[in-house]
Amino acid sequence: MPTATELAVTQAARLNEIGFPEFTAKLITDTFDALVAANLRQTQAYIELVQQVSKTLTQFINDTRDDINGEQLMQFLATALPPDNPTKDSPPTKIAVGATIPDADATKLNEALRVPEYPAENQVTVPDGALTQENVNTILAAVANRITANKYTLLKEMVKMGILRLVVENGKIETRLTFTTYGSTFYEKVATQYHRDSFQFKAKASTGAFVSLWCKASASTQYNSINISTTKETNRDITGSSVQIYGSVIINFKTDYQPLAA
Image (cartoon, rainbow, N blue to C red):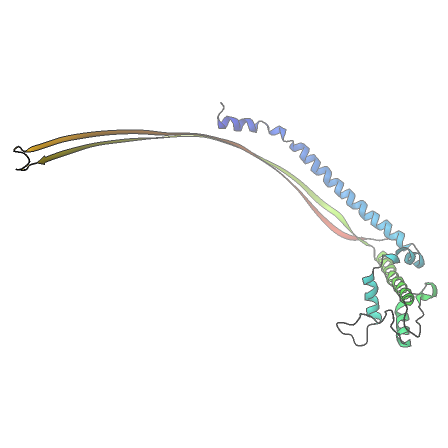
């Protein structure tokens, strides 16, 4: 049976089975692929942005206004027409089914909804009486147009500035392999010897005038000898191996603006 040290040497001889060169090659390849993929995603984002801003305002609004959610609509109306005396239980805006909107508030609402270069400048007609569900839906559609137009304007400004992108300036790929083997053999023997001698004397005598005319006496001795021998023997053989593959990628990057034609 091989010893622990022999087993440790055997494990060390299997170092080539770990595939460390393959590990390093894959690390480099995956890093390169990630950088290329990131650059392609940025380029795709540039293309999509250019496609969006190349549309007319009307086309952009018609294509994207459905993405405006109810929370955004309510935030706009709460800013444009908040209640006169708001409380914690009052609605966030005056626009609601059954509400009556004064002329001054109707003018204020249309000023907030105005979108130059859009058909009818995105204006709504507010009835003199209470608002119906149809009136409210018309106002919400105009609000969606106004919010979408704001996004269109923002995209235009972004194109003028250029697009923020990440550019890899320099990088460092580091791989490291730590292979450790160890072996040890432990032997222990403990012996114990125990010896005991004991001597015991017993004597007994009795006399009595009415029992016997003779005096009775007896005596005896006892000798004991004990020998105990114990032995404890332990054999322990320990072997092991530890492998650690370490890989790291250090990338230093900078940001810049990529100018785009408006």
